[in-house]
Image 1 (cartoon, one colour):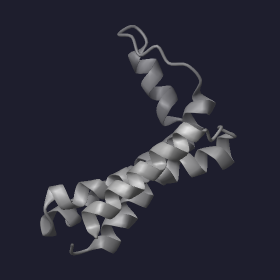
Image 2 (cartoon, one colour):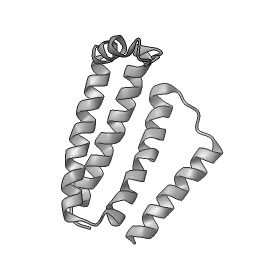
Image 3 (cartoon, one colour):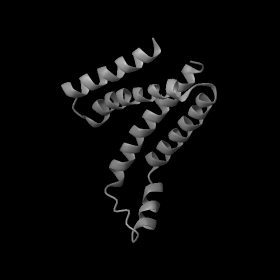
Image 4 (cartoon, helix red, strand yellow):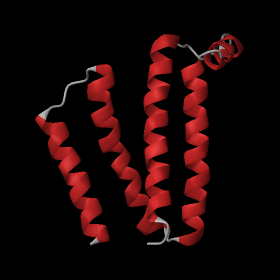
Length: 120
């Protein structure tokens, strides 16, 4: 696969963006996103710096991913995206004090095994 380092950077930026969005969502609180509150909710969303930063990181990830897709087959590239699950699980444990269960460890192991099978 060409540009694997760019693909991995895209995955990493996407995972970081997701975690930062979670930080922002925690600050934001609940949203109804109903037609009556949609405008107010959107204004509240864009006022949270972590949400803006998360969007910026997702945009960077997206642009890098487009570059990857111009050089590689989608079926070879997309399995790398599953590595973001692992990154997010690890970051969630440290940042949000989420619990790592045996099921999460087994599931993560299966993801790693699947990516390894595709690339080896």
